[in-house]
Structure formats: C-alpha cells, structure tokens
Length: 392
Image 1 (cartoon, rainbow, N blue to C red):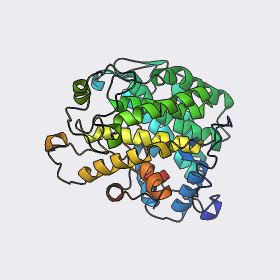
Image 2: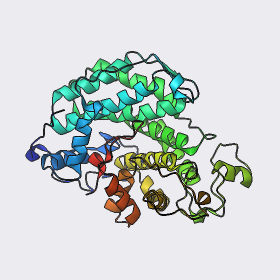
Image 3: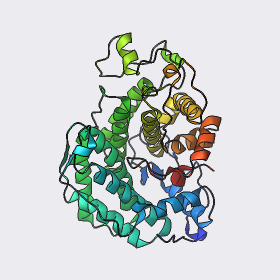
Image 4: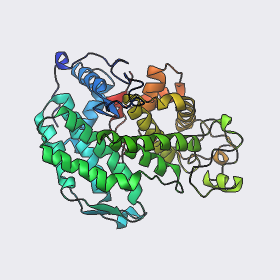
C-alpha cells in the first residue's frame, strides 16, 4: 500500500500533552458525557500520530509502515461475514472465528489509516467492512463464544469509535445498525465475564465491555466494566500486600488454598508481578497485560483513573514478565525454573502511562518494548500500539 502522508501543519497539534488525555478527572463521576473519540485512542493521540508520521519520526514511522504493509491495510480487502460465528475450543472445527477477528482488525486498521492520511478510500473501506458484519451476524456459539465475542468486540468498538467521530459520510442508518449489532450480539456475550475460566478470558471480556460501553454511551455497562476491573485485576496479578496467597477470583468456585494453587498452574511461591497464567505461558499472561492496560487507558480518557489504583500491580507484572521474556534464567521458585517465553505485542500502552506520564522506572519493560518495536498485531485484539501509544 502506498504511504500517503499528511503535512505536519494539518495535524491539529504537534505533540500529545496531558491536556489531551485524561483531561477531565471527575467527569464520569459527576455524570458528564463520555469523551469521544475515547476507546483506547483519544483525540490528542490521533493528532500526535499524524504529526509523528508526517515528520517521519521514529518509532512511529516504522510502525506506520508496518501497518500500511499489512494485509489489513489493503484497499482491496474483502470482509467475510458469517451469520453465526461458531468457535469451539478447537477453532479449526468452527466457522467464522478467524474471519471475524481479522475483519474487525482490518476495520480498525483502515480507520487508523483514514485518520493519518485523510484518504477517504480508507474511511470507505472501514465502514464497508463494518456494514458487512452488521448486515449479517446474529450470534456466537460453542465453547469460545464469549472469548471470541470479546476479541472481536474490542476491535469493532475501536474502529466504530474512530469512524463515527472523525468521518461524516457513514450513513446514519448504518451507524445505528452497527451500534445495535454491538449492543445485541456482542455486549450480552461479554458483560457478565467468565470467573471460572483462566483470567485472560475475564479481563478481555471486561475490556470489550468497557470499549463498547464508551462507544454506545452506556453508563451502566461502563460502570460494570470498572467494577470488573477492580475485582479481577487484583485476582490476576499478585502483590505481596495481598497476603501469602493470591486474591480469589470473585464469583469463582475456588475455595481452598490447594484449589487456588492449582488454578495458578501449580505455582507455590508468590512474588510481586506473578500472573495467574505465568506458569501456563507468557502469551496468555501477556493478553491480560494488554487487556488491563486497555481498560485503564480507555477509562483514563473518560476521566476515571484506574491506572492510579493498579499502577504498582501493573508495573510489577510488566517488569517480571519482561525480564524473563528477555532471557533471564528463571529461578526454581518460578514455574519450577521453566517458563514459556511467548509474549505478544502487549507492552506499549501500559509503558506509556506508567513511564511516560507517571515517570515510573520500568527498565525491563522499556528494554523489551524497544526490542519488539514496532509492536504490530496479535491477530486477535491488539493492533498497532507502537503507532498509537509509543512514548518515544
């Protein structure tokens, strides 16, 4: 895809500032309106992305080129909607699972490209993809229904948020139809969470709930996602202040210390930053780092400082997993000395707030993030976060 750049003078602001992000720390509590665009990426961040790309600054220009070279950026991209998305635990036997996730990421990719380039062809492609699904999908079935709806729902909400608030040519009827799809097909699948499954399910479902709540201006769903964050994040990432054992997941059937250790994949020693799925693999712990950071970032744009409540827990988890992802030998107390180093592109959002805004020191996370840049997409629910959230 040719990279069409806008001039720096057309960006509406040379740099992102704190006045652009989280500017109204009390407006949700006082019942004020939701801030738009405000699902993961805010107005000030979009202006900063345009400026960085126009000036060909790193790491943003490399991230932009990677996005532009991806299959999701192709103007010939064609959506493949399904009426029923069927996703059993063995996704190979399902239908529409990969197509739905990829189409949602493609819509978000095209929406970002529209916001950077102002090329209406990308805007038209984004809404074409979204319209194709809102015209057809009716539900999700099989074992992974909730997880699948969460993965796709987060990307759909990000794409729709950008298009509704930056593009005037999406017909009102189609916008409303897409919103109805989110409200009736996706939100009911995710807002209740999944307390008895591994925590990455619960956290990405809460992420999807919050993302859709903001886009739909749904205060009740937003409040539910905030409560979900406050209950689940402490039950997923351990801090020594929790006691000798981790917090039990609210609503789960876990009762005894033995059951809790089994739930944590046999881990018996708990230290700051350990995650419920660390000893399963770093990939799933990384999904949860991303979902937690996404929720805190979206809430920040809405004036709710979830980062402030979870900053020490999130920082410890980022540092622990980054350290061993970088190759440090795992001690015997940690997963018996054997860890699976397969983190995804999931560190930019948390790093930019904790280190960029709060000036916390996260040397391991910074080192890993710089090594992984540009962070692209996991083809599930994370996409292009070096472009949108890198703090230089």
